[in-house]
Image 1: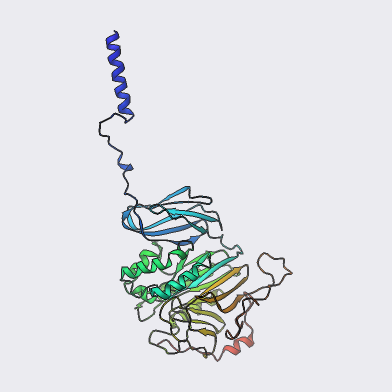
Image 2 (image 1 turned 180 degrees about the vertical axis):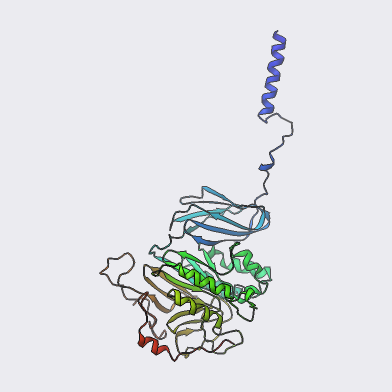
Length: 441
């Protein structure tokens, strides 16, 4: 009996080892679901997209396909977000359940770098928020690098890009350089770009792959604290646009009108577009100057909701003006070869040939900002909207003057200042009646 008992005990021990997957020298079979593609080092990125209340997207590129993973947290990166779908080289991982206006640290697996980013505020809160606006880099690596480095030092919460990132979207090497120059800025600042004419040299394929939300067209809108931003596509291929000719479809115009109907009347409404309604180069070329299609779309939109400002690029200079009651900017000094503006055109308040970018502070019903060159010098200051009390202050307080920001001889001054939501007077309308825009070339 003792003999069989010993054999039984030995058999039981063997079965235990097999069950525990610890038997020496015996090949073990792993479950299929545990076999995932190895993590790959980053070849571009990360950059941040789609900043919404409670979520944000981290994007990056790898040389070979893998499933992306991002660690993130408020104190240290201790929560894991994993990419949905099959292994890919163009990665997008959504960070969800974020607290509003809170700094998070994150790390993409495949890299040891840890970055900090501030999550989006809740829609409609008064702020403050700091917004960077720039564009027209054209992969001119020397000047582009100077603009990107200076802009990164501003530590904005949100970056708006007016388009024309590279000269030819078909060239992967140009995109590699672009992401390299933008790395420090876009790893910490969510990017909201619009399509430029140089982004459609490959019919928009690279732009869609790197930046566009995969379930919507290139025109869309977002709410960011006190801001509602409409991103228009002035080079919509569905409307027949080419790299040399703008186009806006009736479908986009109808969407824009409907989108504005949903916006509360006290919200700051900004429009981001590549070729804007107005611009005045000293030497007009075919396809440049203001876009009639964009002017038409904005004119209809303004009947639905006041539009505070339009930010555009396309021309390689800085211009600020107000025509027919609409405040507009041309911010095309992001690195492309500079051109001369025409500051004498009626409605132009200031214009300069300079590598530059704008920083805009929005808080409650206030919006004001500065434009800087690559040395950090303020070359223009402006107010987009004012009211009796600054953000978070008692009602009896008044917004302090922008004395520290004012720039002598920067243009026509703050002629564009006005209380948010105030209708223009009959006298103001009459004074603008004689201002007309030359047709696009």
